[in-house]
Image 1 (cartoon, helix red, strand yellow):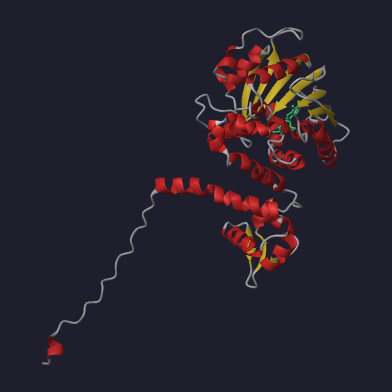
Image 2 (tube, rainbow, N blue to C red; image 1 turned 120 degrees about the vertical axis):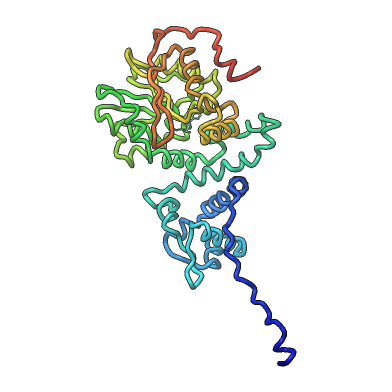
Length: 373
Ligand SMILES: C[S@@+](CC[C@H](N)C(=O)[O-])C[C@H]1O[C@@H](n2cnc3c(N)ncnc32)[C@H](O)[C@@H]1O
């Protein structure tokens, strides 16, 4: 027997059992939160560059897209590749990029379900969110955009963006509002594109609505009413809702998604003028996102609250109890508070308890609770 034959054969490493992957849920959640804005940033960047609109017509290589969209090719390629990774875009074997099914449905401006304006508005608001640390120490730094009425976004992009987002659930909101079939006149204060006026007029064939908003918004409102074939029943008139009266003889005055833009004092003043605009037996309706009474839920409303404070200066989100207190101060009793499941919003229906000329009682206790001195 040779020495070599006596030596033990080298041992094969034993195959190791595949380790069960350990997911640290806490670390994953934190990472998702921290990196979340990178994903949103790619989406905003592609939308702002016009990539989804351009790719709706034909797939193209990055070089051609960079020339047509006026972008740096290296930078655009990085964004397009991230878009592919995020499922917003596709890339074929020849390196041509195209819209994914998700982008074709929601991000192509020509799609009937397009949310292009809404995404671009959120992209414009991202500028304010990125200055959150500065706002925390100097809240008045938010006030440079307050006057615009758009939270600092482009007028048309903002109004159409809100409309495209809200119209997906507007008929559900109209169903929860449930106006009586005898209603003839709705006043929609700060109604924007008229999203809810259109839905409520669809639900109530005998009713007409007037949208009151800033003058720059009104052509967009009229355009949306014409597109919905309701131009003869949904009109638009200029109004500064902080100071103007809202007319008279209304079956319902609607404040939808406007109260979070305003201070408690302004909310009371708007509600008083809303009450004055009603016919006998009419209803003031308040619709929007509300905080739970804990003010720590739902998550979306806690974030919406920060957005309101960042974008509108005096604004912030309210709880149903806050709003009930403000309504009482304005001479209104909240008779019903009902959630709209699909929109994750709430409708408050209020009846006057003070006569039309009645003055609201003083002092408005809830105002000082919401705005500590
Ligand atoms: C978030 S949008 C809500 C639009 C619509 N009510 C809805 O629920 O979709 C806020 C609206 O308030 C309007 N607005 C802001 N300040 C205003 C003011 N001082 N007078 C009248 N409208 C105003 C904006 O132009 C915009 O249409």
